[in-house]
Amino acid sequence: MADANTVALVTGANKGLGRETARRLAGRNWRVFLAARDRERGMRTVDELAAEGLDLEFVELDVACDESVAAAAKAVAARVDRLDVLVNNAGIGSPVLDPAGTGVDAVRQVFEVNVFGQVRVTHAFLPLLRRSARPRVVMVSSALASLAHAADPARPESGFLNLAYASSKTALNMIVSQYARALDGFKINAADPGFPATDMNQHTGIHTLTEGTDAIIRLATLDAAGSTGGFFDRDGVVPW
Image 1 (tube, one colour):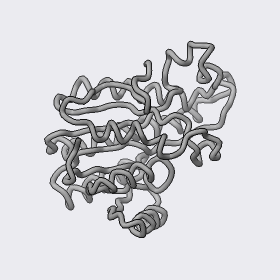
Image 2 (spheres, helix red, strand yellow):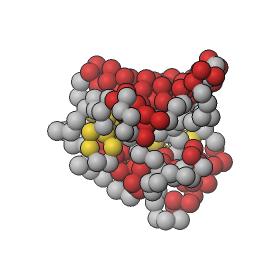
Image 3 (cartoon, helix red, strand yellow):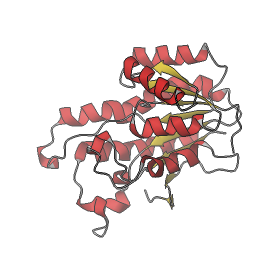
Image 4 (cartoon, one colour):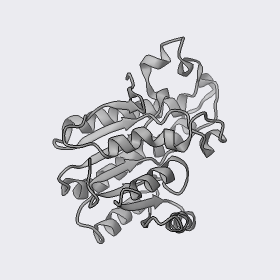
């Protein structure tokens, strides 16, 4: 279990899973940077959590913008000497369209955030992560990324067609695998939050935010013996 001196950064943390993740990590007395692209909403979230007795620090970060990510990494580096945990939570959904009717622009828009954004942020924060004695990176994925689930007619994922979103999360899982095999000493994993009620699904999800962040929190708090290069939900391993 990580100690109270742990430094973490959570992207897309002004609402939903990101907010709950930041809240839970701050509740461990960690130093938590709450990152969001909208300064007003991010600062408001920090103030809301401060009213609960939690001390978080806001950093403006748009995962789809090179300049924003670089500025965020510089701002964090000016305040701390390392980063122990990076939670790449920021992501966007896409309309549920027939894959045959989905054009390349729709796919590109989703990949810009859900895939390229995660690489952009991870790459920018690697220097700070390398200064940690036990760096951990959590990529927030989805059960829709699982090729095994998609091929199983008994699974609900098999009947859910969304070319842009599902393929972006599958690509993200391979990015997790690549980083995990390349970065010695890192714990890099993908978390499946299940189907939590968030803005992305118009709050139709069946899981609470706490349930949705259980896997994220477990992976963020891995000890030296923890797994790397895996895909997990709150109940255990998810098949690729």
